[in-house]
Length: 178
Image (cartoon, rainbow, N blue to C red; front, side, top):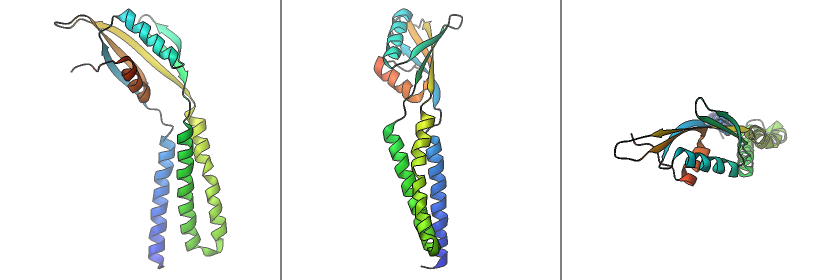
């Protein structure tokens, strides 16, 4: 192979590894969002359902702010074994590709470059340590009287985006109409 082809392959492999690095780092990024939901239930009924829902999901009530009508729940997010294995596999493939390109460019050190693959489990360990963290959910329930409607409850929730979608699905909450 010609040198320009090898050097361009090396450059592309390095760019792919940079992308892999940021992908692994983003796997533990905080994805907290604020969303509003609407329910036809009264405030008291809805508060009971929400408390039961979060108790079933291993969240504990940690704070009640009566002034702002806000409740805080806290729980620990478990890391995903599948994602840890997936990230380790991606890191292994990426470092193997880099090792092969380096072994072709510098054949005298080929065996040493293959040892780079042994670094790949560090991606899974990084994810496993950083992903297990406490998550907090903040709830605020307000009553609204709309035209031609009975009273509705508007819930403002600050939580992880996956928790928000699961909450909406489990309690069949609606998004507010604009």
